[in-house]
Length: 614
Image 1 (cartoon, rainbow, N blue to C red):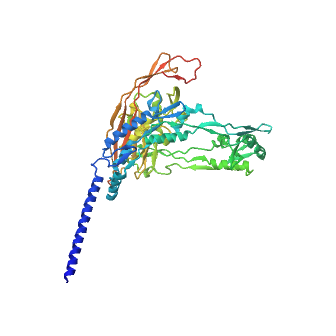
Image 2: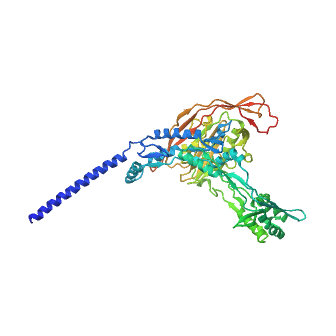
Image 3: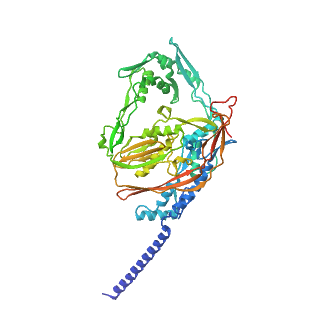
């Protein structure tokens, strides 16, 4: 081996060792950088993470929750101003009933607990490489976790109409009405349209939601927009001859099996309307008028679906209400064929089609349901409730009793309760809103939904939708474990993620309501902490409201004062395979002052429900 070759090997060896040393030093330095960038104390939020516009880097969940609670409380209390010219109206997080805090309506509500949970888990879940990359990216470019805010757009628009409608001039489209007298003589009246100036309330509600999400306190400015008729009286007049010609086509018969009804031209004349299609005015069917005419006939053979209902007797499941198919009219098909009959002189005898509604649980034997044992239960008390509230609790509880929830299905309390008015047995409570006394149905149903919520927690089932009340309600103490409902929203929903059916059992006894959930245990365990109540705000001064609805000089206090507060508790489900589903439930309650009604003499020309403020 030559000396030159040996020297080359020595030089190569030095190069390799040098390269190795450089790689080692680079790796050591990179590891140090990564360690610096990803370093975070156990139980704290990763560096570079923010929630909405608020930096929560390195905070504990409690510290982050405290900051968000303070900021969101300020926004919920202050709200955002809507402005038009010199007129403004402020909308905060709830529209209150002056006399009953339970019936106050929540307009918007933040969900800081979800954002905190997401912030804490960021960079801590998934493969090692993913966790490292997330933390590095957060330190370098930042990571913003959205702060969820739920906004009831429909009620925002309702609020705006109540405050700003007086500035609008209602727009009216050109229309026509057709009638026939008993002798068959026709008459067409053209109703000329009128231009108007109107607000775009839907857009204002969207801007409102955007301001809330961005913590932007600047006012939302409303703008009037001119809206003009699209159809001229002359265009409407041009289609009059064709409509009169169509009325010469004779009777229309609607039929279902052996039952039928003949609709004469004098009756369907009012079904005619006009619309602009592809730049041309054409006659159309006024479906609202057709529905009114057909309603009494259809009601004779429609029927609602009836679900199976079960009860536990001596530890066994027994059916106490058999299922029944429902039957509704295929109205779109019926109206389409009526339209064809009128406008194309098609088939004049129309066989009405029906749609069969199958019960959710049908043709199952009680022994096949897999209902063997009690999964969870809860009892709440309502001592001191007025008569109508107690009645509503009983009606609502009966609506849920015996219902089954199929495996994998989400259960909605609002949907299960159905229509909430006097037709379904509910009694009203008089509430005062905007200085008006009005009857409100459903007072007391939150007692039902709250008890269901607590039974779900006891059973270890996942909650998919829950909202707290705007105010603390004495029936639901301790604060933080209530669930408000107000059809159609907010709702309380949970998921049956077991492999078997779940049976709901309810009972009302004395001053208490009990909800039980029966099924088959699968080895899961549930845990919930006590509510941590903080940020306590004292109640405002008492409020007196003059009303002519009680005797003159009599004072009636509708509800005691209670403090506002924030509350949070932890809920976790541990499944038999080791999976853990853990979440926080956050609630914010505004302070409520005592409200008393004072009877005064009626005014000279009052309306039946006028109420004067203090």
